[in-house]
Structures are given as C-alpha cells and as structure tokens.
Image 1 (cartoon, rainbow, N blue to C red):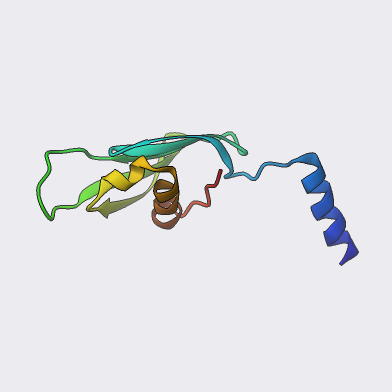
Image 2: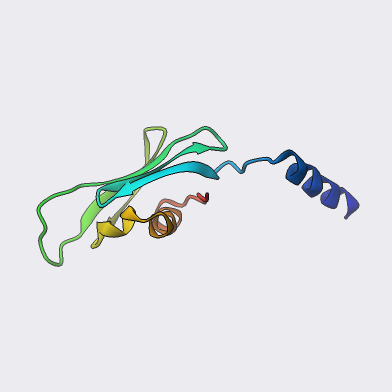
Length: 100
C-alpha cells in the first residue's frame, strides 16, 4: 500500500502528463482534433460534409496519427465544434480517453 502511495506521489511531483491528455484542441462542424498529447500522437475525427438532408446521418472517421480506427455515424456534427461535447463524442465513439 505504501509503494502505491509513493508511486502516485512521485508521478504527481514530476507532473507526468497522461498519454491521452492533450494540450491543444480544435473543432468545427466537420470534425475535431487533439494534439500536443502526452504520447505525442495526434487524434482526429473527420466527418463527411455534404449538403444538409433532414434525418440523414453523416459518416465520421477516427484517426490517430493518420491511421484510421473506428467509424461512426451522427445526425449532428455541430457538437464537434465545442471542446466538451467533441471530447465526449471522441471518447464514446472512438474508444479514446482524451482529456485536457
């Protein structure tokens, strides 16, 4: 038990940044990106923008350093324009654990 407490204290003291803790974020209705992450990787969500058609979903792709991971569909890409909602979407749909 003491070892765990010591390790946690040392990590806090040295300010270790978690692998998916990212300092930079950018977003719009077409996607969002996270960079300057602890693991030096860039994460992006890119959505296919096409003319608006009511009740039609849009395909979005999750990538890490340009490597395609999961894809998902959404009816409202405007939520990617806010840090809080895009981070929630990324963690849920892409399987990430990004934070700031």
